[in-house]
Image 1 (cartoon, rainbow, N blue to C red):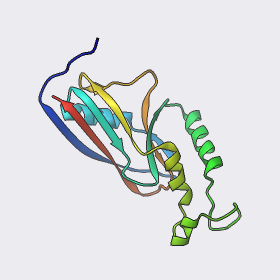
Image 2: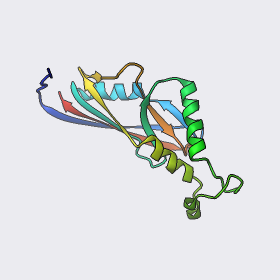
Image 3: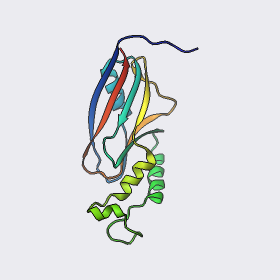
Length: 153
């Protein structure tokens, strides 16, 4: 049997900023999201975590650094970085615009854009081992992540 949650509806929005040291990097942001959920005062609802950049992804998985490595290796096999040196095969057509990040756009498509997670009793309602990650595919500069909590207070 389900549970009926009542209360005043509310929305809380905050942006956090990240800057990766490397072009490709995965950062666990669960604590950052938990902090925003707590600050929101929302007891039950949903939290949206959106990277706000077309060359990055937010996803949910285990916080295990071997897995981070495996994910990046898998993505590189599917959407390799075809630098402008031309040694890696056909150049991405996107590079004709002067960019060199065609692979980053494809990697984001594979990993997905954003995640929506449950909020229960004012906290993230995560499953065993679930952690929220920010995956960067064109880094070394500041980028923002939107965190939007909606629900009842």
